[in-house]
Length: 444
Image 1 (cartoon, rainbow, N blue to C red):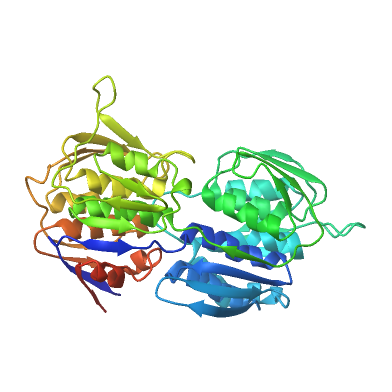
Image 2: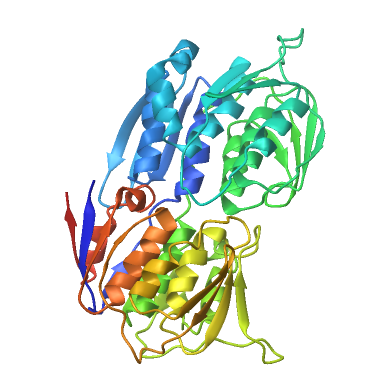
């Protein structure tokens, strides 16, 4: 187990480029299973979760070749022309898939192309209950049968019909706008017979990107970017070339980091059109953000003041399905509010354990009242009192980076254990921050 040792209180400066989007990568890499032809994907981040998924594909026979790599990004070529379904029954596959929540998205493409998939109960962040019903109800509506065992799920499609299709298109209304659920169902439906209509589909940029990639492969998806998708099934898909968007969660994290450390920071190539409400929410927390083309510039400021609503009531920052504020940045918004002027209510609606890291921030000197599992009130210190360095443990990816931001702003030395959680979602974060002037080192 590794740790970060951070000497806080140093202002950062310079430029930083966000990595490729983690959540998009986990979807589009699974989509390579839908064709026997080569698929090239650019801007793949070098992070633990993505690397685990690539290893899973190798394990079941997908040919994987890294054709370009530099300090910022990687390009991979995939070809799934000799997939071994027997390998999915192996103990090694089960062990590796259990450690990665993204492994659930192997089900859709395997079901569409091979008519069968098996996946153990996937792992991931311990941030509360994360049900998979939406995925499997969608598969069942397409004609698949789902068997749940204590060890995981086995999904089977009907036998191939005379036209060469296994699944059959239908109308479905998703019980929640699940991003991974929508992606999984879309990948299953693109090779189903007839037309599939998905109402209440997630419309996050990750799903938008996946649908555009599938269309380049020969799929027929309409309504991309909306919550109503129409999919006309095709018998086969082709190869393509695809580039991942910049990771909007990293962009939001860097905005918060600049504010908390009173730093002068430029975020390059942020793909601003795909950030939704992210800049607007951080501006409501008082952070000054300038846009120059596709770059964002956060100037160094001693103070930032939280807005109030028009009637004078306390500001509330809450997560919501896209285009609302993404749940993955709630932890960052909370930590940014610690040194703002004013108060804010942080409402994490989706997961009941995501705010349980605030005790560590309170130990550092933050004024936070945890109202219940979903809500916390932050009373800003306005930089009148600095946080103090402490030893803490990263409970999940996003809380881990929130703690890292707090440590960078604190007086003294902090140590964050279990940084493997941070490495799951942030590429070489210690090396990149050192280039900006941070005093951070990795301890193995």
